[in-house]
View (tube, helix red, strand yellow):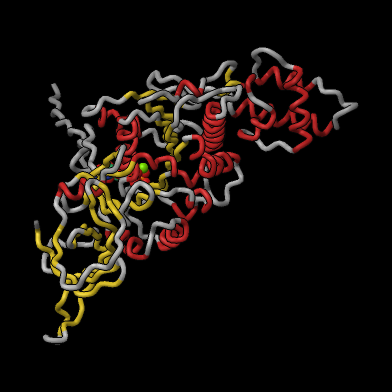
Length: 469
Ligand SMILES: Nc1ncnc2c1ncn2[C@@H]1O[C@H](COP(=O)(O)OP(=O)(O)OP(=O)(O)O)[C@@H](O)[C@H]1O
Ligand SMILES: [Mg+2]
């Protein structure tokens, strides 16, 4: 056991430890008697005897004691002068693992796996950091771990990067990947299609804004159509609406909107469409690659898929008619600020808000990833009970995070600047301790180069001297 120091002051769950070991850092987990605590801050304090800033103190938040294999709450304060040691690998793993657990890396500065309580995925997860801090790599590890437990995962992959990341992870744990592209075909993957003939009038709000009279006129049009039909059939039928009962202006405006819609979603709408319930199967990771689609199409597809998923689960849980999704799942949304932006009026934000507030009851976990946390709707962020924070410097983002998460405190916020690529602070429902500093596993990509400037210069051809004859 590595000696770390000694308790010099103790009040409730907060303890000051005189540090005697250079390995003690913010995030270190310490053992004090039979209790455990985490270093939330460190400072040098003047030593009265020597009259200089000599003593290094660690502010420790004590979170409980191990009883058997379970972490129990503390009932009395820690006694002063108690010896303090650094928790060892086995103790750390015992503290962190509870029931079904996943692990995305190591406890910072140790060889112990950082376990998270997987059962809390449906209280939603937010992965937040500045650009390039390692969000996508971290999320790929999270997806791999949940898939290993059998949980279906549906990912909205805005940059089309998860196929490569998860294929690299597949080398050690075989993963079942199913890629669907949107609006354009790539590498022979099937395209995600939306079945026009199954859309209700209010489903059209995923794609375009309709006024109330336009939506009710569309309802009349759809009632007249039957079987499988396409956008052109809807437009033709709208042209036959009775001008005696519906205002001419409404009919013309509806027709114009439907024509625009048909053009914009030419490659997305289809007679039959993709069965969303088939995308959700145990152990399957479905990647909806929207990287080739326009922003409007991306938002519409997310709005549609989010609604189908939640309603499919509601139908399954309540044994109701309609599309039924038989398994709980994790729904991952990259670049969430584009789909759940505070100022966004698109219906995709409403659908994500619904999953954030109702998803848990129906086994739909939401994982939002963003490099602009301050732009995300506060209601959605505050429903994310687990936060995975990586390097962040922007003060607005920090304030927004501070206001949106119960589990985060000033100690965590002040550490975000100092995190390196791949390092994260995890706090919230998936942990039994106040927070955890984690070094996320690196994913070795086959294409990784040592330098970005590894260009091959064109070889200069030596010109032959012509000999004139
Ligand atoms: N756990 C890790 N350990 C070491 N290096 C890492 C780790 N995670 C990511 N990196 C490095 O950081 C780079 C950026 O990672 P990643 O693409 O995950 O960042 P990001 O936050 O998603 O960026 P963006 O905002 O552009 O989406 C990667 O190319 C990789 O080399
Ligand atoms: Mg990324």
